[in-house]
Length: 202
Image 1 (cartoon, one colour):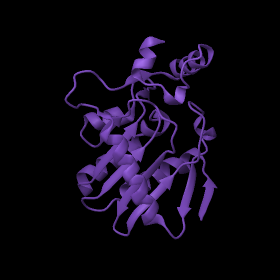
Image 2 (tube, rainbow, N blue to C red):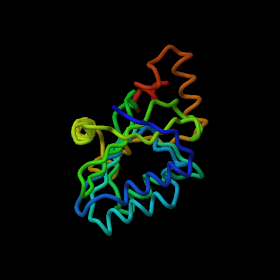
Image 3 (cartoon, rainbow, N blue to C red):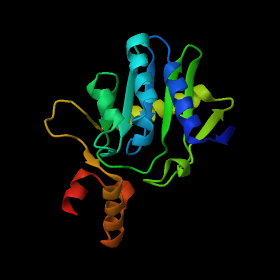
Image 4 (cartoon, rainbow, N blue to C red):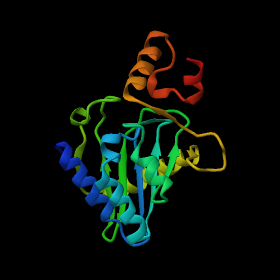
């Protein structure tokens, strides 16, 4: 059974920051997302929370993104946080149509934060993020989704890994919109299932 409550943007940021900062000593944070929404991850409060988790809790934060990372004003907070050593970022070989979620290992066990489906490149207020409380099975769901996360990360390329070539393409919102239109117009794969090589062929 699950309870959900629509949140406004400030509440989204507040809840995410509180969730990250609730990680236990030597705990683990896993975040599976799409293009790394910069309106969320460029927020200084979120970047500070990643720093807190690393430096104050010695926590390991792993983020798994699509191979297309959104940039705003020329940057994305996930990449910056990775460059500073606060988090590890893995890029999937293809975008994938999947649920986005976060699991946080706290002193009271895992917290599980799933999101309801939302449109690609949608305004933050339309992305339908929710506060979710999983009743009578939080550990089960967290364990299941952690396994799902690990499977995808094992098939993903780590930013700053052994390969010289970046495992992602930086894209503006306009670029994503045009890519979606191209995939629909040219009869190529759905945007949800394209990867870097597909983009290079379009």
